[in-house]
Structure formats: C-alpha cells, structure tokens
Amino acid sequence: MALIYCTNCGKQVSSLAEKCPHCGYVFQQNVPQSKTVSNSILNAMKNKKLWIFAGAAVAVLLIILLISGKSGEKYFQMAKEATDDNLRIEYLTKAVKKGHAEAMFNLAYIKLNANPSPEEMSEAFELMHKSAKGGYAPAQGTYGILLINGTYGLEKNVSDGFKWLEMSAANGCGEFQKLLGLAYYSGELGVPRDIEKANYWLSKAAEQNVEGAKAALHVINGLGPDGRPMYQNYGLNTLAATLRGDISNLGSIASEEALYGTMGSFGY
Image (tube, rainbow, N blue to C red; front, side, top):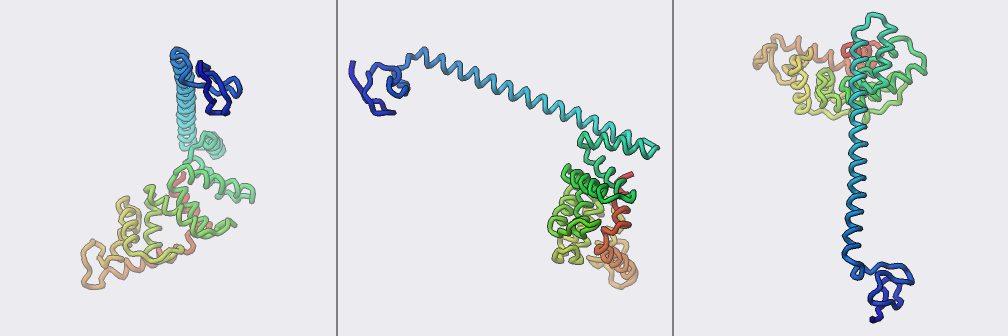
C-alpha cells in the first residue's frame, strides 16, 4: 500500500482509500464499480420521480385552467342571454372571477355607463386593464385611447396608450385598425405622419368592412367612390369631407359619449 496526497486537503492517505479520512473527499477511482452503478441507478430513479411529479403537477394545472376557462365562457354566455340587468351583472362577475377577458370588458362598460363613484370607476379601469392584458382586442384599443387622452382622470400616457392601440389593431380589431390608419394619415395621437402605414391599417379595416375605411383609402389615394382614379373632383370632395370629420374626431375620441359608443359596439 502506498501513500498519496488528497487532492482536496493535501494530506497523506492510503492509495486504496475510497475517501480521505481527514476531509471526507471521495476518490472515485477507488469506489467499487457496483457502488457507482448503484448510485447512478438511485440518482436516475430520483430524477425520474421528480420528472413524473413535475409532469403530474403541470397536467393538473392544465386541467384546472381548462375547467376554469370553460366555466368562464359558460357564465359569459349566460350573461349574454340574460334579460335582467342584475342577473347579467351577476353572471359577468362570475365569468370575470374565472378570468374571462371579454366578460371583464363588458363589466367595465356597464360600470362606466352607470354614473360610477370614484371607487367604481377605479374598479372599471382595473377590469379594462386586465381584459386588455388578457388579450381581448377591443379592450386593448379602448384602454389605449383612455391612456392617450387621460380620460376619466387617468394619468395621460400617449406612448403606452399608442402601444395598446397598435396591439389591438395587430390582434384584428377593425375599429381600431381604422383609427390607427387615420392617426398615421393625419399625424394625430402623437405619431408622425406615415402614408404607408395609414394605407396598411385602413386596408386591414376595409377588409373587415369597417364603416368609412374604404372611403378613407379612396381619399388618401385620390380615388373615387367606385375605387377608380379620379380625373375630376366630382365625388371626391364628399369623401374628403367625411375623412376630415373622422380625423377631427380623433382628438376627442375618448370623451365620455364617444367612449360609450365605441365600447357599446363591442359589448351588449
């Protein structure tokens, strides 16, 4: 038997030792293969159990989310079919508790349209924000306009508001696609004028037959009501006047009356 130095503490130990008697460091080369294999198997079994446990936990979570989502949709449909206002609010509230984004938007609309107290107004804003974060496009656009204009006492934030507006348009909300197109055409809402982007978003809105979107495209591109090039001003002035009216409304789009109209077109 020879003496060697422990690579961990530097003290002398037997070359046949499985571990250092001074510091406990294990010399892998001296551990019997059967022990190494057994340890490997035990570690593998422990890891397998951990993976099984983690997989089971994820599966349970997915099932809970699925059940919750279905029940939220069930309550939302019941709210849409309800003829009594109190019952409708009750079902919407239940759907909101299940995380239903569209129900949050509709409940916020009802709260804002009922002479809310400051506390109720704050609750409505929170519902609108949660609905927007939940991916409901009309809520994203509405919340964006609220921020852009600082409506109802909200702190004005044009940059964040415009991000929500763009998100709504990108998620396919035709009304806000049109609004975004008009904003880019006119340079309103704090954005630089961009005819290419105006054409893009108005075209998207026109594909969904949003009122006024095609007319706006015709004016921007110098076309007549039938979409053909205008060599005379006949008919174009009417379209241009309509477009000017739409653009002039951008500055006050989030007034109480305008906001209720916008939200109402998506709600009940």
